[in-house]
Amino acid sequence: MYLHALVVSLSLGVLIRGAAESEWCYNKCDQGPSQWVYYPDFSCGGKTQSPIDINISHAVTDHGLNDFTFMNFSSKHVIKYIKNNGHTVKCNLTKDAVEVSGGGLKGTYSTLQFHFHWGDTKHHPGSEHMINGERYPMEMHIVSMKKGATVEEAKKDPDGFAVLGFFINATEGGEKSEPWEKLTSYLKSISEKDKELKFNEDISINDLIGHVDLTKFYRYSGSLTTPECNEAVVWTVFHEPINVSKDLIQRFASDTTLTNVYRPTQKLNGRKVHASPAIPLPNSHSWCYDDHCEHRPSKWHLLPDSKCNGNRQSPINIDSDSVEVDEKLVPFTFKNFGNKHAIKYITNTGHAAKCVLKDDLVEVSGGGLKNVYSTLQFHFHWGTDSQDSEGSEHTVDSKRYPMEMHIVNKRKDLSLDEALKAPDGLAVLGFFIEAPRSSKSGSSSSDAHETTNPSSNPTSNKEAWNKLTGYLSAIPNIGSSVEVKEEISIDDLLGSVNRDSYFRYSGSLTTPSCNEAVVWTVFKESVRVDIDMMRKFPKHAGYHDVFRPTQSLHSRKIYTSASSVPQPILCYVLLACLCAIFR
Ligand SMILES: *[C@@H]1O[C@H](CO)[C@@H](O)[C@H](O)[C@H]1NC(C)=O
Ligand SMILES: *[C@@H]1O[C@H](CO)[C@@H](O)[C@H](O)[C@H]1NC(C)=O
Ligand SMILES: [Zn+2]
Ligand SMILES: [Zn+2]
Image (cartoon, rainbow, N blue to C red; front, side, top):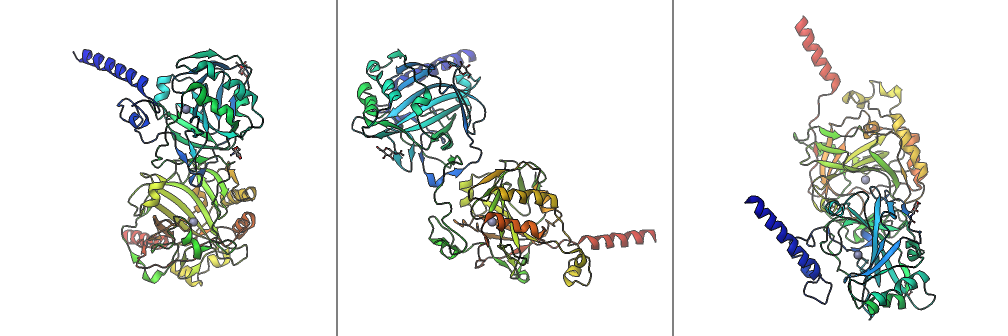
């Protein structure tokens, strides 16, 4: 009985699906793209759909997007058939002959086919993806499937398919491209739906791609752009278009009578679009710390989307007389701070030296934080290369330290976009950096500061700092980055600094857009680093004094962890007890 019902419902499903698949269309029928979302078996109403409009100014450079390896893209004998399937013109390739890997893809993909999206005969453009709101005349999709997977498996895998999207730009008259001339000469003969011809030309996929720079591309996670819209595609959209003469582009609409065969763009829903390092991203250096550019700190609030004029801005001066003890500020729990392979690369952002960590590896919780945070990156603020340089962002009782290190953490349950909007979306750990005390004054009990703070003699791992600062000479240019291969952990860099004793307040990012989304922790004890290593930051980066002036506290309060009993005192107490016992 139960089995029977199952069989009936399964076969019904197949029937409905079969009917729906044959019915969908782009225009010319009732089942256009706006209706696709209502098919229960389709994913077209999902949250990670394609195509999208790529806003270049919101794209983020991903240094993992290395060069592609294309196998048999230049073979002149892999395009087997050309077919009109009623929705598009599709070229099927020789099975298992063509492959794509690299380009930040996880593994090797077998290339199955390529096909096209276009507009109409009145020059209405018909690319699926858009770039900064612009639609190109056409788009070519080269579709590959994870090597070794079946179609059914691939449809269920978020990385099941890799599609390469190429924009096609119309050029006026001029020289016609011979490969495109040959390809489009077939269109008249396959004007009817389901008509298929053997392809007998000696042209390769590379002949069609032409001079496009294959190192410049965007990457995002999306879907097939036709029903069933499976969310199983790693998308690559190349930045440069293929230039094809206008007359040849026209043939797609006029010879097949299929027109406007593209799906409208879909919502991003918080997805990030990544750019390969070869793409120069605009606007990323349009603000600065000094007055060599228009947007110095006093003008940051004029930048687009700026929150820099808000009333919970960072950094601040911490007046140690007016802080309040908060018993909830307990010790932190640090996960993988000891991992010596957590740093992916170090980059010169033009404002700082930033160490980007591997995804989902390092975490921070406890310390009075209400959530678990994933550690994204850490970076440095510095002054000049002089002996008495001051370059920290926070100050304590108006004292500015030589440098400050910021470890940036994002609430694990939020996307970065969401975190930037939540008041506690980010947690930043700030450590002051100064030179080690010389051994003479370090143990001197005549030093007033020493006697009030007897446990304070932190050290950090000199070798780790040496390795880290050694990379700075490899990134002299803004935007350059270098993979970190040496073994360096965050624990090594922090050394024995007391991580239980800190200040807490609510603030903002200290760089534009200054989002007021940060739970700040500023540690009382400073990390000790040799001055020669500190000097490498301004020397190799080529800029200095990269810190924002302190901001008004307004009505905010600064809290402090309860002062822990310094170790030596604890020892005395223990000794006293022991003595008492043995007396
Ligand atoms: C594909 O490339 C491989 C290795 O380069 C080669 O042996 C094979 O003949 C090529 N196949 C076709 C159909 O060109
Ligand atoms: C597109 O083609 C036009 C000529 O029709 C040319 O001026 C323009 O630079 C091309 N665009 C790109 C991005 O190559
Ligand atoms: Zn397509
Ligand atoms: Zn910072």
